[in-house]
Image 1: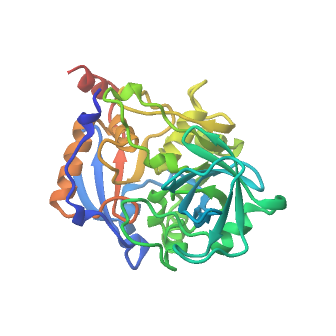
Image 2: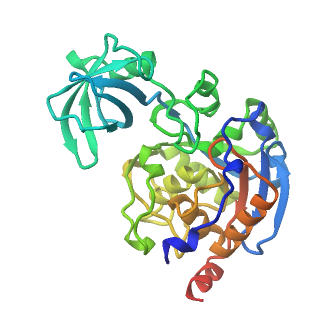
Length: 360
């Protein structure tokens, strides 16, 4: 399939720049992947679309304050976005500057953009493709530096600086394991109150960990989407999740992934046997139309960028035509898009129908 098959025209005014006052007040577009039928609702009414034997699978990664400002020893200003932590005192990062820093050079860090450097610094130890390997001096934990002067890494389509409220709102209420540099945004709609209501209704939950990397915003440049090289992200699926999925199948319930990261986690863990198996390591799974889903029956997700790998994933799940029609409807109804925007609840299309769509 072509990249252009996943293009849609989005008015900039529909890109959410701030979260709503209450997490679960977001709108919810419900799409039946088999029929293409659409319903409009609100996220606090998600219970109306769930059943007592269903299992919700969440991603419990926690976003680190991964954006840093600083300057080279020669004075040139730069911006750092951590891609992933690789050790206690090391990381791979993107660096934006007029001239790339060289291995062996030192970066003097600032608390704010344009501010004078403070006591913290980083050494450039290597160049790894488009990324830079960085290290703190004398083994100082990098996480400590980030907690003091790091900024929340808001996506590029949020055209403002991070503010104090982003430290809470660009984080799920169940975030636990630090390591992501972008939020698993479908989970941002869940409040503690809604989670309690789900539990009272017998909706079970499990957690995977997938540390979302900055590569999630990497555009697809290949015209044939099969030629796209997917970035890698760290993933853990434990035995407890695998057992919960198996029990859900036995009860006749549905496995519902909260976010595309949970989909990628479960499908990676199911790749070898068709059922989730414990998994620990990197995943670079790329899901696009024609993929045969093994673990996931329904999906809670936000709206995704045109021509993005995430839009291709949901198109594989519900069918490209159904997804593009739903997005057109969402635009017409002035839904809010992307990280701080509204959500969708999607049930899977019959895979045979999706494959027939590809052939036609």
